Image (cartoon, rainbow, N blue to C red; front, side):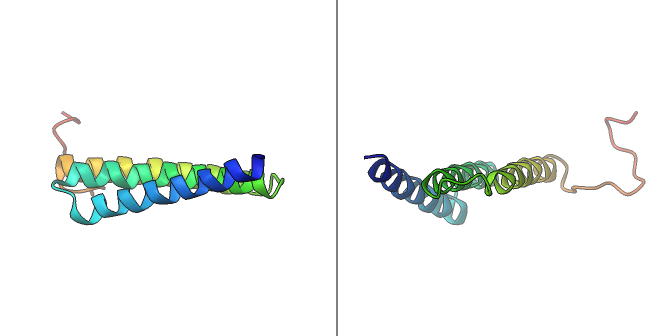
Length: 98
């Protein structure tokens, strides 16, 4: 019974990831694409978690943390890029520093 539920969860998460990938490619605006990329990261975390349960191992827990950190950092970087046009300011005074 548990194996069937886990296989169904993998299929649903895969479909959700494909739907988000469509939104990344065809999204009407840049913020929509960023949200879709963040959602893909969350779906990947869910899929790795389900695989970890299926294989009955804790070896993938570090991978879950790594995907979560990378998804968060990429969302912050893309959001900063949308807001200012650059990700890293090299010696320039920004309006927030004054």
